Image (cartoon, rainbow, N blue to C red):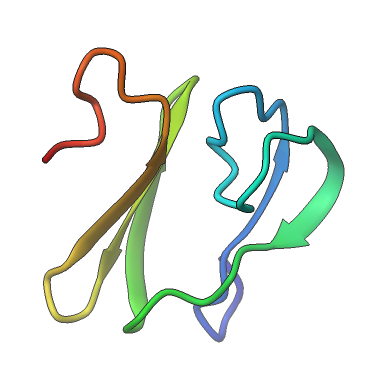
Length: 71
């Protein structure tokens, strides 16, 4: 996350865990499309990622085989 709260990701992307809208691996930091609201915190696992925005909303993407993305 940069100082303007933009999110970037890179790496293995088999499950879409980079949040880029595809499953192509990325070797360089790539901007994730803006989320509605200012991103406050981010968290990631091996197959998923999540972001908390200022209004309390949580956005998640990637693999949900064990319910890790929530409902």
